[in-house]
Length: 486
Ligand code: NAD
Image (cartoon, rainbow, N blue to C red; front, side):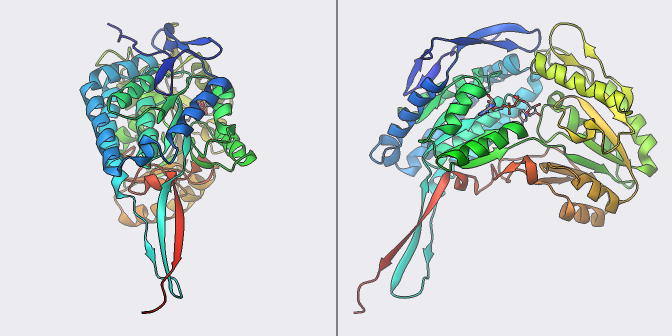
């Protein structure tokens, strides 16, 4: 049975409201393309109201600003309890609106629980320092919330992204306006209701569903928004940074895409490397920013690896995300299906060898066969651009020196990995590869405890880790003259 849809409106100043224009848009089930619900469509007028509410809630005398930091911890921890209480429903809703297979939805909700509790626990550990400046002066720093934050979410892992961005901003003491991705608004709305149930004061969280070109642009250009945190495409990331510079010099955190290299050395344990390489690129039908979408395999084991990779890909069970046996679901929507199929065509045209998959499955829903290209060359489109689909691209290399340079020859720099039994290889690769996250003999092993973010065109700033709240804080230096010596 389909999960019940409880919230479809905008949430502004503690009220569920229709948009000012009265417009709505449909949200879909990627399994069969059917309409799940009509959702209120916000634009500039609604963003203005939401930002005004968040600004009032950020006033120095507001309940939120006067609240003890330890009470912030309690509210956010209670939110974690409520997410746990409703985890089955949230997983079903995520899967229904996003196409994520249930198994993965459960894993993500589980890691949300960790994320929320860890980040919440940082709220009362924000500390400044005392500084030994010269002269008869006493100098110290205060770390203070930056203000109203605009949080723009992607569609690929909506619950995890909501938890990470919203809870970090709130732990820091900011107020927020959230714009969920237009494809997947439903879990963000439900989580907002849980935050209110947990005791968040009026106006601290506001949610405006809508499109990037309208609601998103209004948020990124709003003069009363102090910071934008965004996860999504490289192209939109650049627009957001321009918008931030165009008016009030907003602080910006950007988590953008990647074209992450995974290197398999000739001394790697293939029983480990083959499944991890597949896991790295086929998980969530390839719709993850850290997908291992350039797989460099050493020439000595190239043919053997390919044979094993094809065998492995054939074990992937593509099907209805609700079915517990499915390990791969549909792409998010028709446009992403067409985009990924376009890349597959491009791969064939440019001379890569298709060894398995490559076709759409059926005519309803947005399913694509797990696909492997071999003999891929660095200058082919499928080796350069983020595909965001279930496409493994295998490239051949001869030496570690060579593969490090090839791995770095991209504008992206989000993640990288190496499988090897030689610690020298692991250390050299980890030192020289240009990526914010590097894995050795594993892949996709992320954790809220460790910083996450990209080098180069993959982003700006870091999320997660002990310092994550700093991205939502300003540092104020206070210097006082000491009284005359006694
Ligand atoms: P996108 O970057 O267009 O959208 C992400 C979010 O930004 C959505 O909430 C969208 O409404 C908003 N947005 C779009 N244009 C905006 C603008 N001008 N100003 C402010 N907000 C704006 O991503 P997409 O179109 O959904 O996906 C396109 C590609 O992005 C994918 O193929 C994939 O390569 C990449 N992507 C990456 C991630 C990631 O985790 N890094 C997530 C989703 C998509």
